[in-house]
Image (cartoon, rainbow, N blue to C red; front, side, top):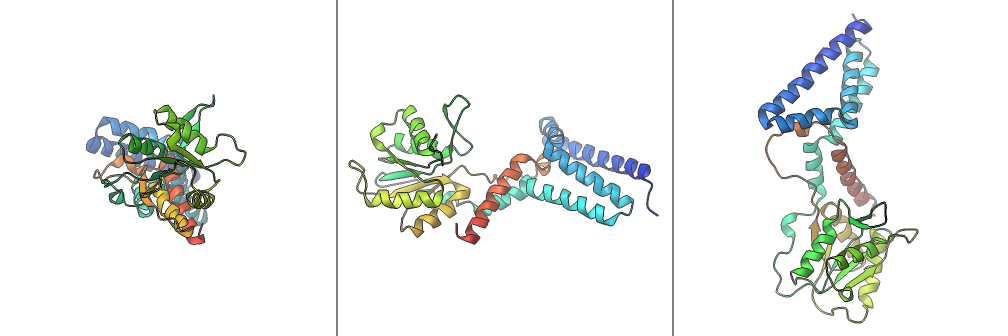
Length: 283
């Protein structure tokens, strides 16, 4: 017979308490106190609470033999766990990222130029340029120039309102590292398709002083590289891929704290899913 509401709640609370304490205890045994504390903290963050709450109500309604409600909450729990679990997300992200071992490490001659796709920069509340989560794009370009591996840098990107264009912000950040203004070029475009069209026009009619020989490398986040290279090919552009800002994790063995879903992992899952959908619709 279905349990009474109070009895179902007590049983569900007991079961969830056992599961949570066991998980934190496992993390303590395997990883130590720091990661055990981190796991406990993750559980009380919004995504962690959503996962635990949906699991809790799935148990409650299951005990009360309320199949439809149990299934609904179980699906929510499963969706949050699947899209926010670091192991699942890292594997999914790895499937869309450009291989890291393809990055050109040795060159007989420097690149003619490196193209830094917009998206790696942001603006502080006071209007100061900053590197964003994908700031490795700009930083890698600066490293390549400082090491003598490229003769010029092209920053791309534009905003619909024309304020704080990524191409302008990227240029300002590169200038702040001491890179000469004369080797930095800008190309606009509000999305990757527009940026590649603008790059086609730029390379067909390069400005005076732009290097005339050598390879051109494309710098963008690893998860975005496949789409960027595909759209570049549509425009007849032959770039060397230089992926950066990898989001898939190295294999460090079993780490229990990574099982709890987080907002960061869900954000990465969304990025990977967006790339998959873009490939399907040809964007």
